[in-house]
Structure formats: C-alpha cells, structure tokens
Length: 328
Ligand code: ASP
Image (cartoon, rainbow, N blue to C red; front, side, top):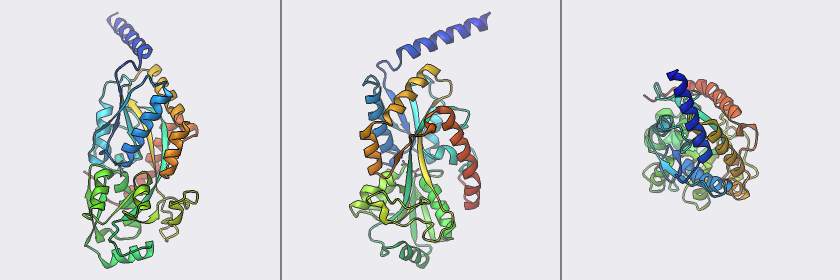
C-alpha cells in the first residue's frame, strides 16, 4: 500500500513537472570542457537555437564543467536531478571514454536519457605558425627529424583531441617523437598553441577554421575519409588517408543527454525543441561555416541516438586498444 502511494506521488510530481516545464528556471547545458573550445561553441549556438525553437520560453545557460577528458562533466550530469533543467552536451567521448579510461563513474548506456544527435565535425591536424613545414609531407619529416623535442596539446585524457593524437601518432609510428600536454579543453589548448607553448594539436574544425583562415595556425590535414571538397577553406587540405595513413578516419559528433529518470514528457519537449533548432537556417549556416554538419537523419530520435552510441563504443574499443595507451 505504502509502495503504491509512493508511486502515485512520484507520478503526480512527474506530471506536474511536465506541465510546468521549463518554467522560469533556466535549463543548464553542461559542457564537459573549458570555455572557448568546440563543444562550448556548439552548446552556445545550440542553446540560442533551442531557445528560439521553444518559443523563447526556455532560458538556456551553458555551464563548463571541465576536466578528465569530459568525464567530470558527464559524471555531474549523470548524478544531477532528473528534472530537465540539467542537460549534457558531449561528443564522441561518450563512446570513447569507457575504452580510454580503466574506470569511469557512469555507464554511458545506462545512466542517461538520450535526446538526439546534434552534429558531425571533422578534425584538423594543426601546428603553431612558426613550424617550418607547410605541407603534410614536410610536417611528417619535421616531426621525425625532431623526435623527443615536440609537444602535442589535447583536451585531457579521453578527449577527442587525445583520441586523434593517439590514433595519428600510432599510424605514423611517431609516439616516441612527442610529449602530450593535457588541458581542460581545446579552448585553453588553442591559446597555448597560439602562444607557441605547444607545437601541435588535432582538433575539431569548429575551433580551428577561424584560426586557419586568419593564418594564426597552420593546418596540415583533415581526418575525414573523404576530402572536404565543399568547404571553401578546408577543401585545400589533404585527408590523412591521402597522405598514406591507411583507413585513418575520425569524425567527431555531438549529442544531447539528460540524467536517467527525467520524465518522458519533459524529454519529449526537449527532443522536439532540439529537432526544431536543428532546422534553424541560422544555426545550420553557422555550423557549416565551421565545417560541421548538422544531423538531419533518424539519429534525432532517442532510440536511434542510443543505438549509434552503442555502435560507436563497439567500433572505437579495438581502435583505442590498437593505439595502445590508456588513461587511469
Ligand atoms: N575539442 C575538445 C576535445 O578534444 C573538447 C572541447 O574543448 O570541446 O575533446
């Protein structure tokens, strides 16, 4: 009897929550990386597009919870109140961190509600402008000639830039040639590159396009399987496959999550807001200018989003094991 009563009370609370959601309380999008990086940028653009899509009634704020390759922010959201006011925008790290870390505090497929995919983003291999190399070939030769002297920045163990640097260093067999330096996100890592404290980085085009265009960093290659022939700037850079790194392919994706147990009606409202936001021409244009492609396919549905993450986890595990380096 007591149990039935508890279920009834919980159901009434859930219904009330769904009817009043979002109310006046802001919806926080937790970005598990530092401000000024690609995930942060996507979250800010998405928050604005979702606010418009939800009739201006929802007030989105971005909260940066950086550290440990995104796992600190993801843990925070897994443990947050499941009321729709705390969401997580995470990238491929949702699927790669279980293989990159020996232990993480959440289970990607069990501790979250899946709200839908947002975008897909290529990565670029970039270096500080002072590097003497101008082409990928020269760059590789330079790295070999300077074994032990160079630093490569990334956004923390388990981050996408870490994954890319692992895969690339293992493909070119240049692991011993450089020291990896972790940051809380590629925002601060980019600052270190611009300041010349580090030599290179592999990062999402969301963060690098503007810097490449203004000549503040040098780009050497893109990480997609096919050249980015439609992009006015990035079309000029070869793929790593074209440069002889057989089967090299890395595309980063972002997606939105809520803590497990968020009421279904609230999830539906957020998912609808997300779907509408992704049709916003202004959002699409801004993303495309940064080399990112807004998702338009079935992965906007929670079940397909979850199946995609599960497939990515299975795909990345052997790739990460082959690259052969793990975080604690
Ligand atoms: N680009 C970062 C990464 O390497 C994350 C970020 O700062 O958005 O995972």
